[in-house]
Image (cartoon, rainbow, N blue to C red; front, side):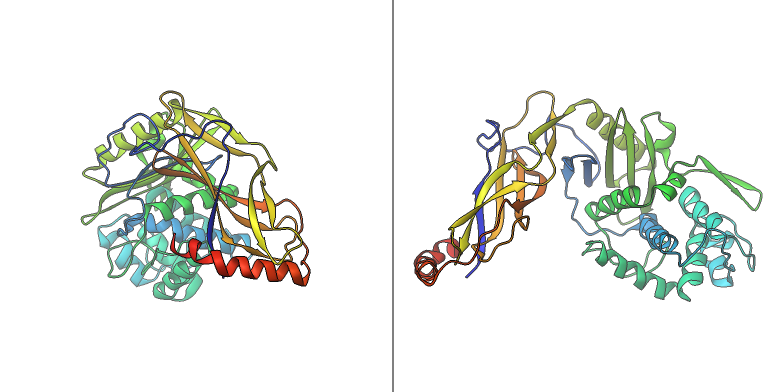
Length: 389
């Protein structure tokens, strides 16, 4: 019976004894309750602090709102010049009378989709969100269901959206880890729309408003994405910054004040930019381990990387690395070449910092009756060891 198996992958002499560590490198104290800092190129987790905790999304829910809009634009279901009417509900709930973040869209006016996008991204406009939601789905509730469905399509399994704005509502929740993943997806998938996140200001209804992202004005390479606040979870932020070819994505939540949120984010981004260097652990298509095969002409197959495996490592005082290939095995013959067979997982200290798929190097055809009988007997006698290890 297949079970989870492990194979040790060599790290060119870098493997060592695990050492406890709260983050990758030098100690860094942060006030945020939840933190995730990731290098975009390598996927290395540079700093992690309870990133999977469920929290209210606040205005960070607007990242998902925009993803649904961008997806529709990319598929031709929507156009930037298309217009939607501002309903009384949108005006009262998210417009001037609401006392919340707004682009001051006038009731019964018909702004273009591109104007609404800029209002939502630059000004965190709740009225802009609701107008888009009603225009695309009929009601905000139906649009929120579409947001949650789209989150599942993207592999965001924990996030639940109840409205398009992130205004407090029972049942809505996100995690910092999933919001960072969403931000990386938006940057990678929609470069033609990501530019709006770096837009310094936007004027609507003759009212000029500056971008609410404080990092854009700190000269640290920041070019997105958004901020949020709820009384329950405090001040939060999802950000990206690029400098000298290195792009970092940061998520924080649970900061006591907006001033401290900006300070914490700046500190983490500067730390990530200045204290790490890119190191190649395995070249492209490098053989890193072997998986056992049941019922094949050979008892195992070598596993290789796909793309080169690179990791951002601290410039000083590097904790030891540990690598394992995790797969469900034994693989059942026939096994085709190039099949994804497992995952290469790399830890720095006690922190899982990188996961990459591994693939079979060649095919393994079915073996004869004798070979299958031998494998069956072996599995019967030793399978329990894996099951109960």
